[in-house]
Image (cartoon, rainbow, N blue to C red; front, side, top):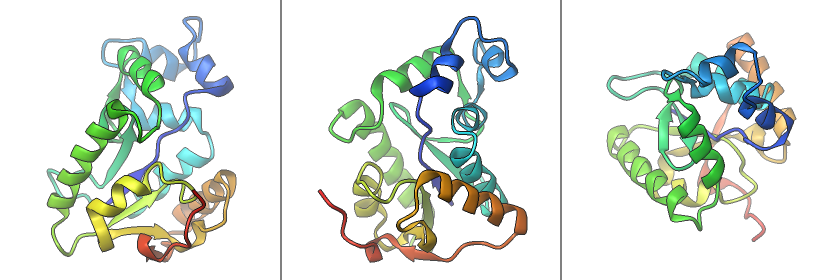
Length: 191
């Protein structure tokens, strides 16, 4: 099971995606009632890092119905499948809420879905976080709920987003899965 951190809705690509004049396929699908898959939208927003996370997770995830093998953190909605439909209304909510554990609108659905994920994994299951390790915006919620079942790629330690994205794309293409360590083994973060 993989949990992917969200892509940022700010910046040039976020503004382009939210523009009513955007004519590229993802923006057009996003404006339909059916929406566009969150994985596709976030891959547009983060053409290297999120795209790398999604490619890697899709390559190495083992989906066990009814649980998908790849979940995405969607601020305001908790954990959703990579093919979850992102509509204009949902996009506005994601953008408005953002990633901030101090905000109940972000924390509550994320915590509820993390607890359900922990129960669904069972005692032998593991979950790999593909996201920032330098801050607590994901780890501070997931680590207490998942405990030793929460893993992270060892090679993520000290790497920036772009380096992690290219590392994940190379691993997905080569078929060589990265080594994981327990989140509890990470060096202490600065507060």
